[in-house]
Amino acid sequence: MAAATSRFSLFSKGQLVVLGLLASTPLIDVAMPTLRLSAPMRTVVTSAIIALGLNIVVGWTGLLNLGIAAFAALGAYAFGILTCEIYPFQVGFWWGVLLAGAVGAFAGWLLGAPTLRLRGDYLAIVTLGFGEIVQDGLKNLEAITKGTQGINPLPAPSLPGIEFSSETPVRWFYAYLAILAVVVFLCRNLEFSRLGRQWFAVREDELAARCMGIQPDKAKLKAFAIGAALAAVGGALIASQLSSTGEPANYDFQMSILALCIVIVGGIGSITGVMVGAIVMVGLNNVVLPIATQSLQNAGIGSTQNVLTSPDNYKFLLFGLALVLMMRYRPDGIIHSGKAVRK
Image 1 (cartoon, helix red, strand yellow):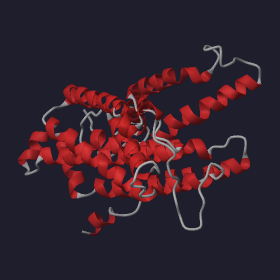
Image 2 (cartoon, rainbow, N blue to C red; image 1 turned 180 degrees about the vertical axis):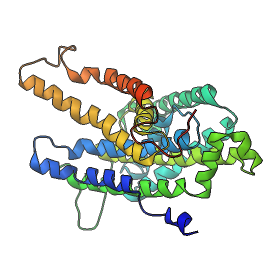
Image 3 (cartoon, helix red, strand yellow; image 1 turned 60 degrees about the vertical axis):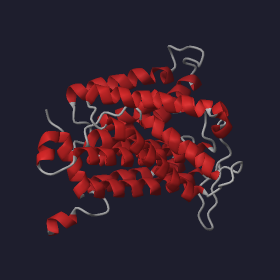
Image 4 (tube, rainbow, N blue to C red; image 1 turned 90 degrees about the horizontal axis):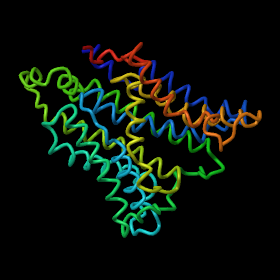
């Protein structure tokens, strides 16, 4: 009993290390002010939250979801409608994030209910189609969603005595990091819960799980709903960060693929791995490549007009190369999960 209950702790050692590394980002800004990492690292945090939602579906339940960006979009627009001054609700930042998660969970339940019996490529095609439907729906419901204009302005986080603005990126970063820590805590305890064990059983062998008294359909439905809720929270945080939902095209297939890359590169089924994958993949895109591009331009090498000499133009090549190398030399990801599938 002691061994079982000890697993229900705040964080593992690996998770504490990664959260600590993320928390030290503002110290790097102090040492090297020209980098200004606090603002782009917020994108790492929001991407990690979306990827943690996808990890529940893909890594723990074994269901291929290629439409996670759709739930991020629904979360962003739900947050916008619930908090923007042009609508009558104006519930504030924190309630907006929570209710956006609830909207995402409901959308995940709606998608999961009719697709529970689909597997593999068939489920991937359905989720991919759902992502395109959500994009078109948000674009065409202009009376509600403002179409391609996006909903703005949107509120920043609010805490007593603490002001959040574009001039205080460090405060934004720590607020978002605190939300990520809460999500990691919830995911860690879900992993070792009865529901988590059901997800792993369904992933390994659905027939055997059914014979053991587990209802795979209900377990999958809960995975879809919880994963979608986390993705919607990530979308709401993105919208608050930008003070706008942006246009629906921002939540496209590329966002879903990036989240899947984070899960695969970091380690399928590993919470720590997902956070590391977000640092590697999003950090490469939002931090390393822009710095490399600017450094080369300052040295008189290349320009934004020359596509061949700008490192930022090679990001998809680098993403694809990273996936190829990971699948070839470390298929379990950077951080291997003890519950990862081995074929």
